[in-house]
Length: 190
Image (cartoon, rainbow, N blue to C red; front, side):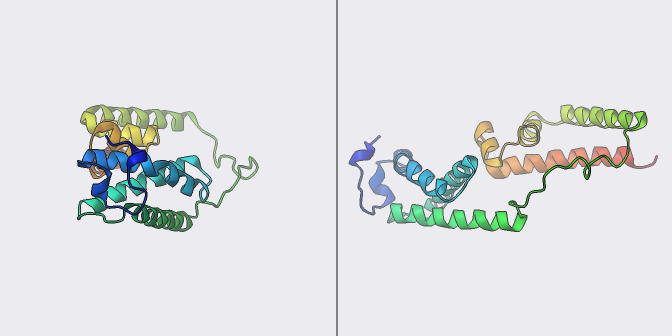
């Protein structure tokens, strides 16, 4: 691996960052990860979002590099960062993420009391879900648990399991479909 200090400081092609793809990406990551975090930290409140946006930049950069050589890496990295930030802002605005309603016990009290029958139905539903999960292939179950129980993002799941993000999404869709069918068949009158 080349010493990041000895790498070109002026706009340079990706090929100038190392002899092979691995060393090129490692050096680009070493040089630009901290500046990207700083760029996002000035514009985003949540440190988790800073990390996600930084990873998004590198993901987009790697995808783009498959299409051909990148001539001026530094300006390109920060153009991707600006675009990722803009896309992130649009998603937040579309989902109205900043809207928040605080909990007020007077307003948010349960509509009905929980009867023993309702508790039993809930327990049966949990048992059904557990049985369906046990019957799933290991990878599909792992993706479901990581996504639903541990609130992991698809990119993290893909990294943990050594699969693509798209594969993680497909496993999640498969798990949800199986659970949906099982729950539907339980609810339909016999």
